[in-house]
Image (cartoon, rainbow, N blue to C red; front, side):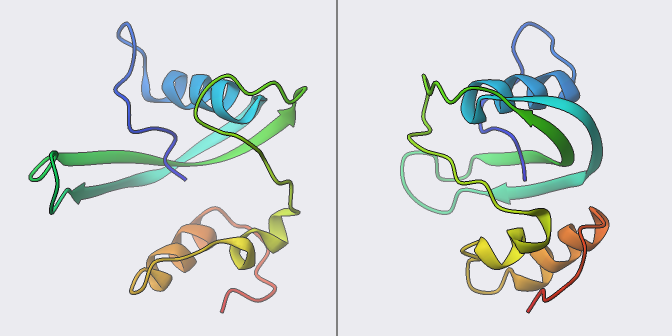
Length: 113
């Protein structure tokens, strides 16, 4: 998943932004990670209409820390990697994108349909 809608802080590298966002939003520490790619989207309505969003997409191994939410997230749900795909709500038309993302991340493919 892309880590953030916010820009990097203080000249952060992409990986530093991802690590910070995981720490702040999921109360977890990234132990290892790999950049999978980028996605580009354009806001089509509302006050940000026309805004182009570039998101980095990562596979990360994390260590779960004590749950102490201080930012946008109100809860977290832990699922085994092989169940992650089935636990997502995937917007219409984006199934192939998400299946490819999981394949690139090499998450065990038990049932990605």
